[in-house]
Image (cartoon, rainbow, N blue to C red; front, side, top):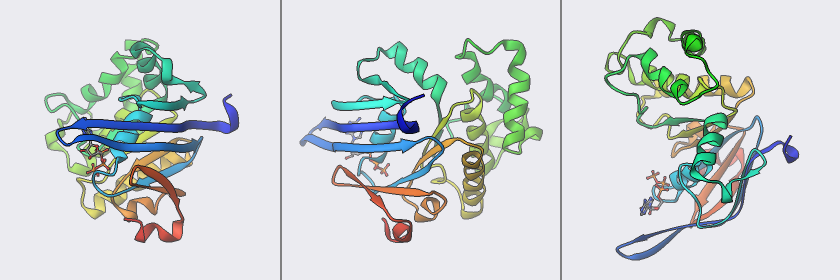
Amino acid sequence: MFMNNCVISLTDLNKSFINGAGSNHVLKQVNFSVYSGEMVAILGQSGSGKSTLLSIMGLLDTADSGHYHLCGQDVSSFSAYQMSQLRNSHIGWVFQNFNLIADMTVAENLSVPLRFNSSIKQADYEAKINQVLDEVGLREKTAFYPAELSGGQQQRVAIARALICQPDIILCDEPTGNLDSSNSNNVMELLSTLHQEGKTVLIITHDPAVAAYCQKAYKIHDGEIAAVSPLEFKHAV
Ligand SMILES: Nc1ncnc2c1ncn2[C@@H]1O[C@H](COP(=O)(O)OP(=O)(O)OP(=O)(O)O)[C@@H](O)[C@H]1O
């Protein structure tokens, strides 16, 4: 087991982007840890670097310097193949726009990550799909297409897709950003249940009401990340 159950550990992490105006130093010497079983929010204004940070933590992007340990493994020197192996075994993603494939049914969408996981046999796909649809309360929607579902239902399918390969960490990029308040609450209740069942859940959001579901919150400002006390959540952005 990795030290202190620290599943995500960033040390002196830097990330810049070059654009027409020069270099934009988005993350500056960031030090940040997430422990197994935590539910954590990262707040910050638009353009503050939340998605950049989440992409690095989710192994979709790399830092310019510093170290990232995911579940005890220093990914700095990992090949693209090693990164994808690590990502597939530890991380499930939930995006603001759901990112479901429009011309695939719910069941077909859920089969996509299974096809990239050689340890799951095709004969087991249906049982896995039914199991995650039960978890998100949408078993009766197996044969529906995304356009036939509400936004909240689509996001619950996306959460089912994130769960299907049994990751220990769920990374959520503005998971309620396209939902009304009732569907937002449903999605946050579902993420809270997953957290109570032992998943580590990390959520980036503009919305203090979303952060209020989390035990810990951090704020990114001027490229630096700092803890926000629960009492400050509603004033954090
Ligand atoms: N691929 C890229 N190339 C150049 N600049 C980028 C790139 N990705 C992000 N940036 C810049 O980095 C900064 C941080 O962007 P990022 O998307 O991480 O912010 P954010 O906090 O997630 O914003 P929002 O809440 O609006 O989604 C912005 O100034 C953005 O323009």
